Amino acid sequence: MSSRQNDCEGELLAIIRETVGEEVAVGALLDRHTNLSSQMLAAADLVVSCREYPHTDYARRAGEMLPVLGRIRRGDARPTTAAVRFMAPGAYPTTSEPMIGFNERLIEAQQTPGVLMVSANHGFEGSDQPDVSASIVVTTDDDPDFAASLAQQVAADFRTVITGRSWVGPGVEEAVSMALAFDDRPVVVADRADNAGGGAAGDSTFVLAELIRQGARDVAVALLWDPVAVDICHDAGVGASLPLRIGGKTGPMSGDPIDVVAEIISVRSDSAQSLFGLGDPNFPLGRTAAIRVGGIEIVMATVRSQVFSRHVFTDHGIDPLTRRVLVVKSTQHFMNDFGPIAAHVIRCDGPGTLTADLSTLPYRHVRRPMLGLDPVDTVELEAMAPVPARPRRRDRQIV
Image (cartoon, rainbow, N blue to C red; front, top):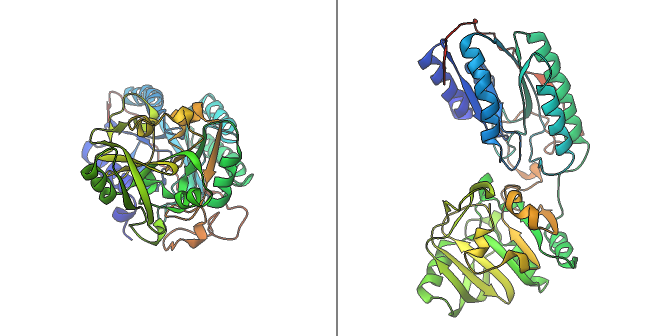
């Protein structure tokens, strides 16, 4: 695979640097799932990642980054960057321990005198390229040795946090049984293996089939991607009851389609949700339909999307506060809106495109060994190539 195929962010930053030259201070604000590359580090004065997962802090991190870029532009700071990576990419929620404590230590490290910026990247285990990894980036003011030592220290802490516990949740049958056993409500079950935000189809039926098998009632499920079923529901209209085949249309990782007798309870063409559960609902879902199958309500959409906010239910007359169980096809971004109302959160790791069992995936280009893929308990820290310091210049521009 060429670098252009592997590393689109690095390629973009390299083109920006070539275009603007060394006279411009270049910063990159990245997703915390970034697979860090040497090309990215070489092209930018600052490589900064959001700190929260779900990613609710882009504006705050930009607010930290821009004053530092201003210092670099004026020649008041000379960025020297070091990075350490290790083969333990994954989804590590920052809404609970141990990541809450690690983030606090990350902030303390950034407040150390002489440090300009510290970022941690989870990496993205759903991609298959040589830069896949978790990583730490430290930028200091004209002190490369300190940047290197601090990056090693923070990376060792990060690795300890990751390897100190299991990040795999219960399987489908166990997750459904756990959810139905609680008396308080709502219990939120995250169907993580079918998260469209990570590349899944959004039409898997494993959890839904288990809910039906266990006779679950007072349950709502979203979002099932099924344009064919949605169109049929729109044609039939609210109040209709009809046989319907739902889900399981994309391939083996989606499970089998389910044949149900569906009561159509809502059809809409204007439903939307809030991105990351923040602000107004301006993330459109296309044509949608909600059906009732026994004691289960299912919201389907023509736009493939993970669940971010409660609008996926309330737009269709479903009050999430009154349901016993809510099943959301999402990994973590649902937490900003659903976390505050959830009596319990169960992160289900069933079969699907985003399976937690990485050993079942056909990786060809990642570096080995990788935690979760190979039979290892830990992995080595790897110092990335040192980033040459750019000349200190005054009155540079900012990109």
